[in-house]
Image (cartoon, rainbow, N blue to C red):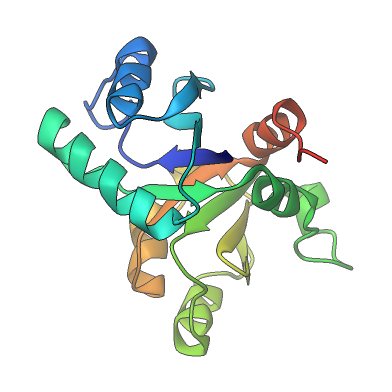
Length: 182
């Protein structure tokens, strides 16, 4: 069996409310086992016999759209990939993270190309620091989200692809709760 963490976009934001027991049931309908949710922000952990993460993302997205009536972008990571995202030290050698109001991890479907990464970095500056590492985006915000000109939508536009953001605290808790099996 393979374990995945699904990071879902558009769950319990923007008027799209889905109770966690309903979300677990929707994943169980797909034949997944040991389905759990982690906080009410669209994090679902499950086991499956499939190792095809991209195929699973497509199946989940199609099922959720059919049932919920709207797009729910899905970004799968193994527990090892979550641990790697949590362990990465963005902005190494700078005081950016220590001075940040918040540190967020954005999950992407694929590694951004150089042009997209350049557009993303151009959004940074005195108020924001942005970095990509593999299929993750790291965003250190030096102001509260409601005071920022940067949002998930502006990040997606710069990257030319979808993302879903989680606070680093959530990523750390997921990595601790679902450690890599030895």
